Amino acid sequence: MHAYSLFHRRLYYSSAKPIQSASCLLHPSRSVQIFPPSLRLGLSPSTFSYSPKRTISTSSSSSFQDPRKASTFWAITFTAFVVGGGAWLVDKYRHALGNEPLPQTTDHVHNPPQQEEEDLFLGVIDTLKTMSTEAAPGTVRNLTPEQELKLQEFWILLFKVCGVHMEGVQQETDNAPPSPVEKKQPKRRFGIFSRSQEEDDSASLKSANGVAAGVASLVITDGDDKFGQSKEFQKALVEMKPEEIRTTFWNMVKQDNPDGLLLRFLRARKWDVKKALIMLISTIRWRLLEAKVDDDIMQHGEHLALEQIAGSNAAEKKQAEEFMKQFRLGKSFLHGVDKLGRPICIIRVRLHKPGDQGTESLDRYTVFTIESARMMLAPPVETACIIFDMTNFALANMDYHPVKFMIKCFEANYPESLGVILIHKAPWIFSSIWNIIKGWLDPVVAQKIHFTKSVEDLEQFIPKERIIKELEGGEDWEYEYVEVQEGENTHIKDTAKRAELLAQRQQLAKEIQDLTITWIASNKKKEEEKAKEAAEKRNSLIERLRVQYWEMDPYIRCTTLYDRLNIIQGGGKLDFYPSARKESNGAAEKAKEEPKESGSETNGETAVAA
Image (tube, rainbow, N blue to C red; front, side):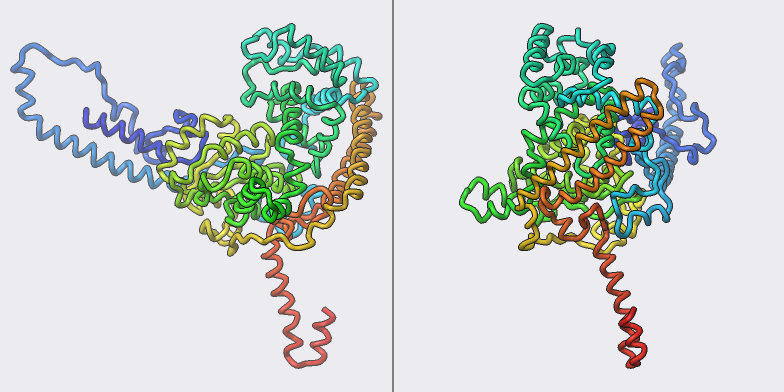
């Protein structure tokens, strides 16, 4: 029995080894099942049980020892039976487990799309026209009445921070009962300010920036502040004027629906409006004052790096060379979409060496890639698919800084942007590293992580014909960096036109703000017809705002690799597989020319006409 007990322990651990989902790793008790239903063979739970309560006779030493003289043979026989039978079960169990499909991600999709739906993501896609796929719950065009009310409350708080006057709304919201965030303020050990500090700081903020004291004093007090965003929120109110916050917000919206952007933060904070506000304002501060996302990274991109490489400033030159090295090496790249239309980012971990670049250049490259992926979201798709290709991974490739930075980006500054993360072909040495990383992850993010070992595993998420051959798929495509072309970025230098377009955008934003206030006020007054009319006009203006972004895009966003590859085509058009389309068109043109080559004049004229 002791032999079986030892075997039982080994079987328990070995049966939990096949890694499929990070959520299973975080909660192993949910996934442990020694014998799957197909292998139980009708055994009862007591079949292999060991009971320590068995009564052993102690009447005399001789009567206890005599049977043992003849028991050695049976003990060996029984042990061999258990070990042999156990080995057979383990082999069968592993075989059965290997044939089980990987668990699907729970992100926003109810069922894998059929082939016809997958074809929606092929060819040229107009992102200004929403595709006929179902919008996920909690997103634009799929809100419950309660969720729509939360969205309206969020707009009200944002307008307060931005100093926007709200006729017919201001008085009611000022008298509204406190939220759970404020009710939990007595837990001062988690708060940032004491009561007197909060009152003093709120008063100073109101006088300095015009932000209502009730909003300026918001702070997360229940410990749910992983990245210290309460502090960042307070800093934003001190360092930025309300108009600056408002302008940065509308610049941050880009080609998105502004409602969709706010809903990301609401979902990330479980529909707690005030926590969502703290998160949003913290992100606005990060974008403008820390990362300088719109005014530097995306406006200057690769072009500035090339200028700095040719310049005389040694520090700038070094950082620029490190930045460009990421592109030329192909450490990561965006290519194609998965079954759900999510842009795919492939990260080749084996190409990363921690000492080859500094953290600043790597962080800049990471933000540049995330923002480029934003340009490739075709509504109602709102998330991306990331593949960490761990092929030939070694400890020399491990670097915790970029991992921490990416976690903070996706959890704090780009909420609800991850659809699924596939960690592909992770070697056994990664298990100890994973034990560290999983402790840093929000449980919601961890549920989106899956471990894959083969191309068959990847096919659960990506059609095989759209898996690149480097990952043993059927797409004959290889990454190749296309250098910046001379004259490709002329519009970015037209500062006068840029200022004109930015002014137009802010005027559109103001009109949307006014209609948003009318929409909210009419709802509060139960004026259904007026609310409906305001909502329709507002939606029309939002569509104009999205179109206007693409008119402005060449003047505010530096061209990227994905523009040069003709994936981002301008005017809101995308083509995730332009090379395949080009080859197809080339074959069609060749077929048209075949009659001309036959020597028939009539056929030749027909071919030219075609």
